[in-house]
Image (cartoon, rainbow, N blue to C red; front, side):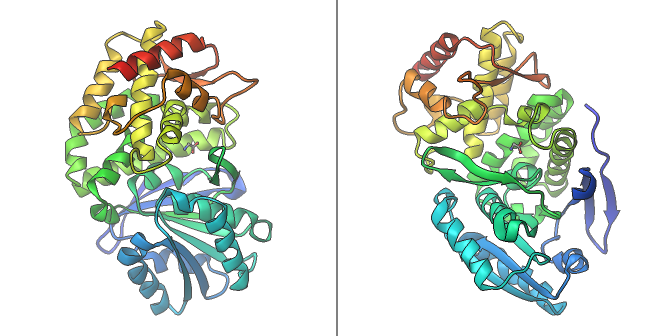
Length: 383
Ligand code: GLY
């Protein structure tokens, strides 16, 4: 896979990697480095059209990162207004979305203004969607504070909220104008959140880059120990892979669906656990990746030993790798299949899966017999 070439700059004391998302007039930079949050004014002030900024965040992130972010911009003469939403996946629905849009309108945010999403995937998706529909489209900056958001959800312009019918079913493509991924903030993440985000990092190796997966097998423990250079390289490489795919297929007509490796199973598991703390999104993706390789091997599409290698790495990292790692009861195989049928990738009633010929060789298919999936789920539930 050819990667977008990142550029590396030495700031005053910061090493900043830059990955460009090449989308013509809607191109933007993803800047990656430890300490970017405190230096955000240097990144953002040049793209402001008046010295005012609106930041939407959530209470946990606000407690750690809002004041330093605001202070830098205020020192540069920018007025910063903030809306702090409740933390958690349940924020990503109509009530907090409506609250955000109405707050931005009450604040008289204009079309040429800039909104900042400061937080993890919930905030990035919700604020991006608010920016997409506010006055038919306002510019926004993503400042992702979780590993999951830095490597996946803040890049590529997918925005949205959840419906009672399923996750991310209401939304729009709306690209940010800038992404600032401060890898230093990953030092403050709870270990479980860091590992859940790592599920999305592993996904990149599994879907398109066996060498990267090998690098993760070597360096995963150092990443879990939050070695700064390893964290930065993992984020940079993941973002470079995503940027290359998004540049070729922005609206998921084809190749971008590969980024959903593990998600058909993962979303069903999240729905089965009521999007609760029983299973975080990245944990569902990691288990889903293992199941996707199980299915690939069962269909004779990939070597029989590959699923064990995938699972061994997840276990080495202390991650959930099996259905039995999810606390509490799960629906039976038919119940899980019914939840999978809500997936956005369903076409003409047929489930589409991301399967793989081997590590780094994923592909999309809708030619999977549901009875094979049912048997696979039955076996996985019995393990
Ligand atoms: N998270 C999958 C995508 O952005 O396409």
